[in-house]
Length: 502
Ligand code: V55
Ligand code: FE
Image (tube, rainbow, N blue to C red; front, side, top):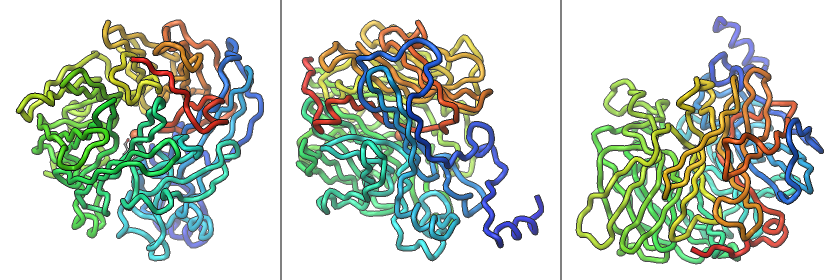
């Protein structure tokens, strides 16, 4: 396409997405908001004891990107929900009406430039909050919050998905934004969360927050990271929270030149801060190890003086869309994640930690039984993974759902078949007091050849058996990042039942 033609298009304001892989095939923009009562169930039966709502969200570009290019983690947040009622499933999807969405809606075009680079915005959007609300959804303190790590949460109505507004905990949260990876302790009903670069772009401040069961700030700890980098996720346990710092760093001078928000520093180590759950800044313990990278943590646990972090760890960055700082090309072999246990001895006087790969399978998007976040220990984990025996669907993420049991090392897998991929599986307990892992896994399945989606309901104790039910969508749900299952009782009471024992 010639540039004259492009200019002509922009002159009339036509919406045309650039012809790049991100927007082709399963990645093509959807942009539709849908309501579908009583989805088709194309195999099996939806368990009648599964009542509640599954929420997820992901990016779905409202307008073609300003710069003509984009990275997949940018794009306006589209929330999807599956409401389960007595064997019926109703689907709904809505854009989050963020400040960014609304100003762009008014002007009928993108006004934000490069991912998180405020110096590349259209001047009209200079004072607008930038969050896309595209990363995660959490139900806590009677509020449904949709999250992006460069803004405050947005509150939505849990049933209609109508946007209520940007929520800063009534001004009590002093960081300029909050993480998209809070962890909920369903036994104490506390939400443990944080902010990194908490005083703005390029700052080293980290704020760790405990939000009480009433939705009010209960405890906070401010400390300084070794550098201004990405802290996408953290992990919690009964007594400690764990912050790994990987060397994917922000440089404000690079931003001012219109550059990327992060570059990868392969010459720097991994640094880990361990903070007592209700502690103070002077109690933060520091550990150091080989260069590594991770997007997501499965969970944290403690055993006497030992603290463990289970994380999908790779030797180098897997975010190839952020360049190497030293100008070298990215090395795909360094970016392969495996579930790995890092163990820290709080009684020792060393800064080193033990590293132990737990499974052979390439995996990401780790989850646990949600009732076991914030616990002393846990044993069940779920991931999306590469099926070592089959060809991956390619392009659109990892093809299979994996089910792990740590004490036995048992690993099971469900592959949804050819031309299919899966999204992060979420656990739903059969009953509030079911034992760990007794329940269902809910996973969106990308049907690439049919250009549409299914929702698979699997037995979380035996994914190999294949879905208990497949709920068919007539349309495509683009790649979503994260979300949560909220049982009916938790929705109606605003609280999770305290059932954990271990
Ligand atoms: C990640 C995702 C993001 C983001 C930064 O998975 C990091 C990592 C979905 O948005 O803004
Ligand atoms: Fe994430």
